[in-house]
Image (cartoon, rainbow, N blue to C red):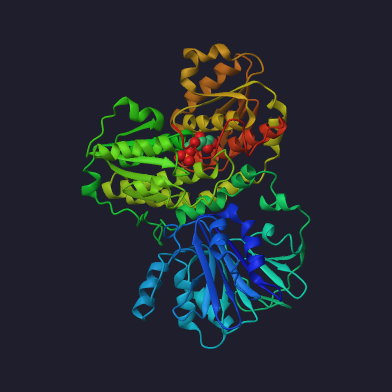
Amino acid sequence: MCGIVGYVGNKEAAVFLLEGLSKLEYRGYDSAGIAVYDGSEIRVEKSVGRLAALKDKIGSNMPKGSLGIGHTRWATHGRPSDSNAHPHADCSGDFVVVHNGIIENYLNLKEELIEKGHAFRSETDTEVVAHLLEEVYHGDFEAAVRDVLRRIDGSYSLVFLSKKHPDRLICTKQDNPLVIGLGEGENFIASDIPAIIQRTRRTFIMNDGEVAVVTKDSVTITNRRGEPVQKKVFEVNWNAEAAEKGGYEHFMLKEIHEQPKAVRDTMSQRIAKDGSAIVIDELKWDAAFLNSFNKIYIVACGTAYHAGMVGKYYIEKLARVLVEVDVASEFRYRDPIVDENTLLIVVSQSGETSDTLAALKESKRLGAKTLAITNVVGSSIAREADQVLYTWAGPEIAVASTKAYTTQLILFFMLALYMAEIKKTVSPERVKELIKLLKQIPAQVSETLSDVDPIKTFARQYGFNEDVFYIGRSLDYDVALEGSLKLKEVSYIHAEAYAAGELKHGTLALIVEGVPVIALATQKSVYEKTLSNIKEVKARDAVVIGIAAEGDEELEKYVDHVIKVPETDELLIPILTVVPLQLLAYYAAITRGCDVDKPRNLAKSVTVE
Ligand code: F6R
């Protein structure tokens, strides 16, 4: 995720660009930049760090001119740095571009453009767009942009500025948001409404494939085929704060709803075009390397640790390698058996959690090979590890982690399958089948999010209970742990998760009439056993909410309510079952009037031990 803005009018562009970017920092904040056409040249100013660093750099020497574009970055390709910050220019400096998204075929394009003599200044995927535009431009700006769009694959929203056409900006989008704000003698472009709401409430919301030519007095929109599109003006009636959350009441809810896109982005570049294999270009692992270690540790904290538990299951099941999972704050102090035959995988959304970082450093000292799974490019953990796999979830603002967890699961699944391909522990047919099911997950997460009313009702019904129990076996148990953590941290309800078979060894004493028990029953191999455990709590008059896959007609006979998620392989179903549990935690917190995005005593990034 990044934030982009554009201005064309008769006022100072830089003023709007900086103001607009300040409202988009929630989309990324590792570097920022603007480009303004001053009547003869395009002046580009950029800086690593937050927008404040860019403002400091510019000081009172603001670029002059009434045509400009700007960007606040959430690094994907290329670490946060001045040179990787947007806008990016072609060789001549005649074209500049800002981009939110990922150009999947940028490496091929880059090679081709370098062969043709283009000189690149950054490590980004975006820069190819500027050079490609220069390459295909023959006097018609819009035609050249369309040519570029035919050549690039991936997700994007893009704004183009050309010195040769100083009366206009051209913008387009595919799978990333873009709005145009309609002013009087001026028009605005932005990733999101908060950037423009101070200037206008009249907007066009762009659809995928549309191309807009924006001048100060007109906006002309055409579709992919170049046919005119008549758009309805969308009047924004939210206040500025609600707009920043995309109309959602809280970042947590917004981020829960961003999961279809987040999981799609995480998987999209890592599947072979024909769907026959997982391709993780970031890793140069071969069978010899994989056979060189005899043990894997997964080390993390909180939600990331819960993702690690699922990761252990995936790697052991698919790649048949022994995995141990540990919380980072314990790992280091128990004198772990780590040597050069160990692979340490650390998982961290922020990439800054100090216990996880310390575990990583200690393991490196002991000779282990290290791999980080993180969401933040250039974070301390990303820099310290030998290898990095990024979850492309975009910035997570709410303290309670949601989209980070589901994207971590996607990445673990893909890593395990990738290892299995190399080690040949899974047949090619099964790999294909699992990839096919994996590709359905984004749509299935959307489906799971499409009917939240029953969950709201449960939250209202049970939101004032003081204790809630979560039970499940196998992968369901791992998800139960995450569900109970979500409920605790945002609603302050005491919640515990148990391996369903473990209840009768003590905890069953706490199950009395009316105590809510959330029972996950999606794992076929232990289904009957889970049913028996559900009967045990029902016999003590617990109220049971079952979580099952579509097609399960059995569970509803034994529980009070059932929430169903779409059917998929039981390995993948945790990515779906966690979604209603996130929503349940959210709506329970709302019922109790809690500050969802900033739960008491907690911080987003825990940089103390
Ligand atoms: C819970 C939550 C925390 C984090 C934990 C690790 O919702 O967000 O438990 O998962 O603090 O943080 P990262 O992943 O940034 O290392």
